[in-house]
Amino acid sequence: MALTEKDLLKKKQELETAKSTVAELTGEKNTLLKRLEKEYGCKDIREARKKIKTMQTGAETLEKEIETKTQEIEDKYFNDED
Image (cartoon, rainbow, N blue to C red; front, side, top):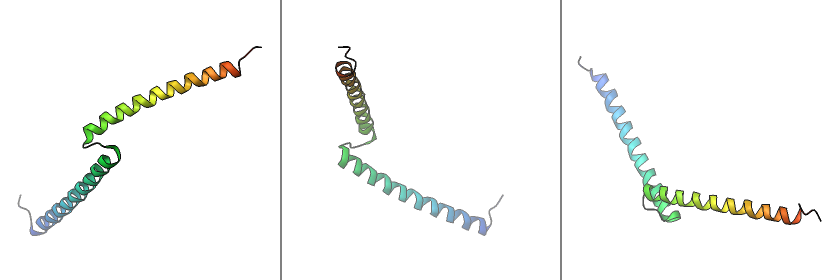
């Protein structure tokens, strides 16, 4: 099945659009990677994932500590049966 000139021109336009989209997305990716490095000190996605895990663990630890301290305060000041 041979393509007509019109079909070929349409395919050419689709290819040019795809190239443009790839270039845009590549630029956005590079911008985000630079921002990731500047703001969080991560050189790539792998480092960012590790940092996220570390930060999540830290946040969970702080959350537990806050809950414990809050409970201690409630027990000491609000649940006193004196």
